[in-house]
Length: 406
Image 1 (cartoon, one colour):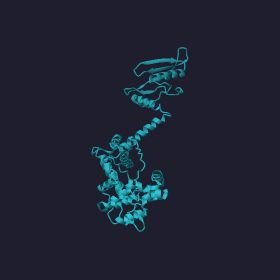
Image 2: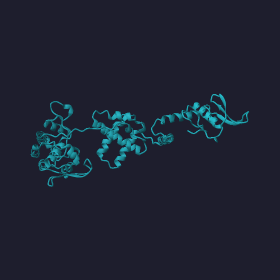
Image 3: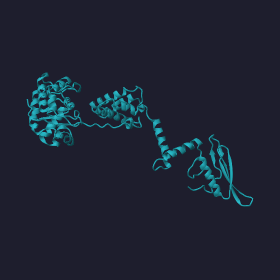
Image 4: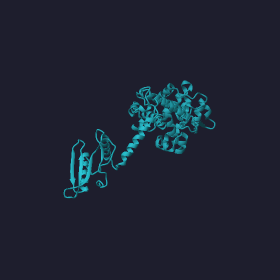
């Protein structure tokens, strides 16, 4: 680095550790006894020690001054003495800050100023942050989602999960005080990864909304890991189990379960969608079931074409309430040769998840061999049909399934 310029001020004021401004050093010229011009460096150390040295040129005096300053302040490379209003403590802190940043690739001195400005912005934002209790935030959040047209079932689901989380924390806790460890410990109480994922999604929805509304700078979920769930291949019911299920639903409990079983097994309608249907939406003459947007999972109206087998079964039970009481459904599963619940165990296999719908889609695709047709019929995408339902049914079983008539 270049040395001190010749026209720099001769006296440099500094702040001592006690805050008193004193003259640190001085270079003056004079004629020596031989009549030549000489330069004297008068240097005072912080402890009061005074050193005077004489040099034949101003450049030599500047060099010695630079060496003494570097030795005093621990500089490894030549630097300049400068006027400053910083206290000694502030100078030390600045030096330490530069030493930290210099370890970063591509560091520039201006980066320290950028860091200071970013700190001020964050500090001011934190000071201006709205304060709201977690429970109040949840109420505001649910009210906003209701106004935006979210389905009632979605609101109920969110309220259940978020209220459960809030109950684990003090009533008066502010949302800004919620930590990533608290949210992680809450959703990891489940052993099931799917339940963990759904709980985490509800919290993520809440805290992201809070960030947009100015109650949070960042979500505590940002420091938690995304949960990856691997879904098993769909399981379908064998024809023998389908037959036993239909016969039980027809003969027991006055056939009260038959509409639900038939619409699931031969129309592939989702369980929640079935329970929202009325007989006005089941047109046996046109062989169609109309699922309105408000009742559909994706909130889009769709029609489901009914196979002749479904028509024959639905004719037997038309007008009966479309219900699926838990005790009736459990009894029907046992009649088909399955344990209704995991804890029942024993020699019977556990009832596969969404077994009626998976069976219906698999046999529909096996019958028509058209991914697009089955996807439209089931309310899925062709990609889902190809990835999950192709090859689940033996060709020899297709006719037997669709011949399961009363």
